[in-house]
Structure formats: C-alpha cells, structure tokens
Amino acid sequence: MPETNSIVDIRATIVRNRPVSRDVSIITLECPAIALAAKPGNFVNVKVSSATQPLLRRPFSIHDVSESEIELMVKSIGSGTALLSDAPEGSSVMVLGPLGNSFDISGTPFDTAILVSGGIGSAPMLFLEKTLAAKGKKVINLIGGRTKGDLLAESLGNCRFATDDGSEGLRGTVIDLLESELAELRKEGSLKVFACGPNPMLKALARFCRENSLPCDLSLESVMGCGIGICYGCSVEVMDPAGSIRTILLCREGPVINAELLVL
Ligand SMILES: Cc1cc2nc3c(=O)[nH]c(=O)nc-3n(C[C@H](O)[C@H](O)[C@H](O)COP(=O)(O)OP(=O)(O)OC[C@H]3O[C@@H](n4cnc5c(N)ncnc54)[C@H](O)[C@@H]3O)c2cc1C
Image (tube, rainbow, N blue to C red; front, side):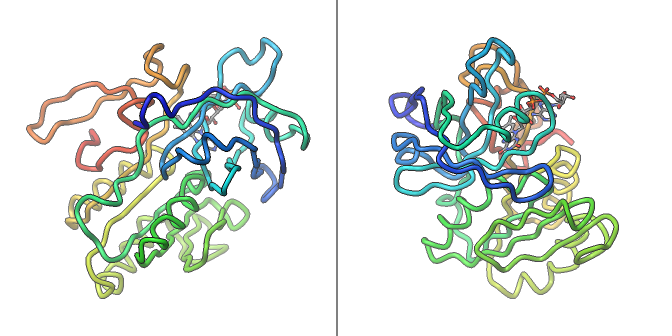
C-alpha cells in the first residue's frame, strides 16, 4: 500500500480521451501528485460524475504514467464506466489515489518477466512493462481475448496472442499459450509471471504456475466501494502458506497477491 500521506483526492482534468477498441478508451488525466507517487499495480478510485448517480467511485488500474499525467484504460460495461468513457476532453473528475499495493519487482530476482493479460486485464501492464524495461528486464506479453477485436496490445512490443476463436494467434486460452511457449521462455533465464484478467483465468493461471514452479503475482478484481478499507466491499479469502484461510481487503492488501495465496 502506498504511504498514506502520498494518497490524494484531487480534481483532475481529462486531457485526452482516445478510443482503442469498440468499448475501450484510454483516458489521460492531469494529476501530478498521483503520477509522482504511483507504482505499477496501484489503482485510483474515480468519482465519474458530480451527480449523485452513480454514488460510489469506480476503481481503475493505473495504465501508464508520465511526468504529470496518468492514463486509465477503461472498458465500458455499465453506467459508471460508460460515463467515464464518454467524458469529453477538458472536463474533470475527482480522483483518489494512488491506492492498493504494487507488483513485486524487487523481491526474488528474475531475468524475464512474462506479462499475462486477458481482456481489460491489460490495463496495468504498460506501466509495469515500462518500469521493468527501465530496470533492464526482458519482457514478453502474452495477451488473450475472446476474439481479435478484444485484444488490447497497448505495449512496448514483444506480444504473443491467444483467442478463443483462433482469429489471432493461438486458438485457446492465454494459459494454453503460456504452456506452449514455456520451454522456449525458460531459455530466457529465470522467469516471473505477472497477470491480470478475469478471476477464472487467474485461478487457472495460478494452478499452472504452482504446478510448474513459476513465481507469479496476480492482480485480482472484485466489486469495490471506498478503495481505502472502510466499506469491506472487497473482502476476498486467501490461503496462508500454512494452509489457513484468512480474509483480506483487496483495496489495502491487494489488488496484487502472490499466486501461492489464491484459494483455488
Ligand atoms: C482494483 C481494480 C482495478 C480495476 N481496474 C480496471 C481498469 O483498469 N479498467 C477497467 O475498465 N475496469 C477496471 N476495474 C473494473 C471496474 O472498476 C468496473 O468495471 C467498474 O467499477 C464497473 O462500474 P460500472 O458502473 O460501469 O458498472 P456497474 O453498472 O456497477 O455494473 C455493471 C455490471 O458489471 C459488474 N461489475 C461491476 N464491477 C465489476 C468488477 N469489478 N468486476 C467484474 N464485474 C463487475 C456488475 O455486477 C454488473 O453486472 C477494476 C476493478 C478493480 C477492483
């Protein structure tokens, strides 16, 4: 979790709103304090409208950071995300952040990072990729989606794809893709997997990584209210190494957890 004193709640101007697919837009917000403090994996909680509906803020991963701006990758799935996706450039929203913990890139050393994402799970990956590249790590993106139009490849490059219908890359899941590439990837030195996507995908990936002794960080999703540990809306069960189950609040102890902790 970022230092509490680095969390701010500020009105941020939407500098750019760039559609990247039929239902996904990249929203650029001018908010220097959050840009300065953010780490890959952090998220922000956005009040998408000054009206009373929707009342609660909506959480979004920090997709990218520049000197004074942050980018969000927003998929329109309901009232809040539709409002943000349609927000005109020059308008503003209240943004609370940076929130949550971050991907562990400085713990156990590794040579090559495998960034596995499904659908809108690509959102936190560009910031992570840039940070890893700046540290001299090799990065390979494995990106999955139902069909070609769902693939979100906003990255520095080195992307391999899987689609359910075979319209791009391997026909199958992104875990099938990792399995098919693993022997080659192991030639790139020690590996660490970083992943974000739908929870069923993350469960299958956690199982695969455990079976293949691959260290893995997962960024989980849940419905979330306050984003700061007050409402308990985002409690999820995790399993300690000793095997005991405990509950964490994803907004404070997550959204990133070690795959070993996921209850399968
Ligand atoms: C830590 C975190 C980071 C996230 N990062 C991103 C991101 O970078 N980009 C992005 O587009 N989305 C992200 N999400 C998901 C996003 O917050 C939700 O899609 C959004 O809150 C939905 O709001 P809405 O008003 O549009 O939908 P609502 O009108 O509230 O709901 C529409 C439908 O979506 C379902 N739903 C709502 N929230 C979620 C959820 N979190 N997961 C699955 N289904 C949900 C509802 O049950 C309902 O069926 C993130 C969520 C979390 C917890």
